[in-house]
Length: 437
Image (cartoon, rainbow, N blue to C red; front, side, top):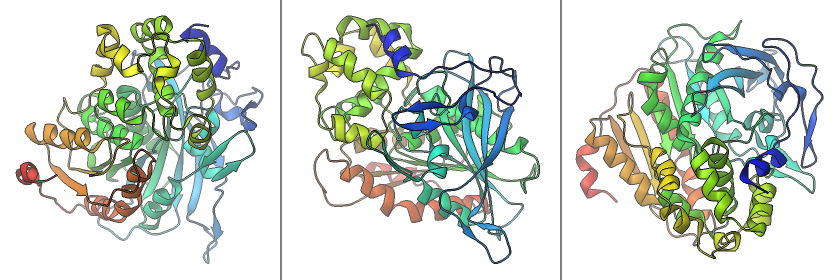
């Protein structure tokens, strides 16, 4: 079975409807979870990036009635909008917008935060917008927790509106999710802002400030959005960007996740890049053995919980015909290495102020490569606030050193971002970078 066939088997593909029309497609099932027909993209997509294709009410799985009749933390709308993938092709992306019940007490009109979720998986049932409706899914086939809901609800509590992107291919049932693809993710984040602005009857105005929040995969997506904004979306001015534990150098990150609790993420990367880039696909086809092909097809339908239970601590040497690791094979293949090199974040100056945080003990998304991103941005004149999260080693390659900073730094991240949304200035600490870990 080729990499193309893997994608075909793994992706639940269904017929689509004309652009803008209400879909009459049937719901599909992924690992025991029913994916609503809403997530089936139309056959024809609009031209302009960020154009709203369709919307519908989204019931939040965690919601309470407010004293004033408005639900807490807000009212959600499921979205589908048009974006552009790394190959320059039109793509439908899903997500959600949440109008908060809390009032914005800062300067100016209600602002908007685009949340780029951390790693959720590659199955359509893992989509962040789906996790807002179903915060916990445990059915024997799928184990998924909407852990990003905590950050989303905390942002809503500040009075900021939130738009969440599902990224390219996560949720939308026409293709595989292109995990950690720099261009796909950055475009999806920026176009989510455009789609939120296009929604009728929200409290957003043309003067609403915009910020981006993301950790882990989301940290890479938010970092990419900050870099791409001036050329891809000059109309989306960023007041601030939080990038936590960004996978900026995938060559380094690949070595970090191989054999770890999150080894399944290596499979998501291979699947996504093989789908998007013919050169990577040909290298995969030539080097993956039968066990690897089976694993890649299986992993492509999984969420994080499934992958940890099913493929945690797997070494990629078990997936290759030569017994070499995937990192070794890619390093020896200039065409494949070029694909990863194109994903490098840090070659462009980020727009607006950025707060970059990374745990010094992080061994899943290695600390050194994340800190190097801060150095690269500083050298390009970026307004960078770099924070090294100093925690004890909580267990090698168990995910604990990666997850702990997500929790411990979240209050600082949201506070910093809220200050930017209120229009408060910030000063770069780039000049101290040589003396920080």
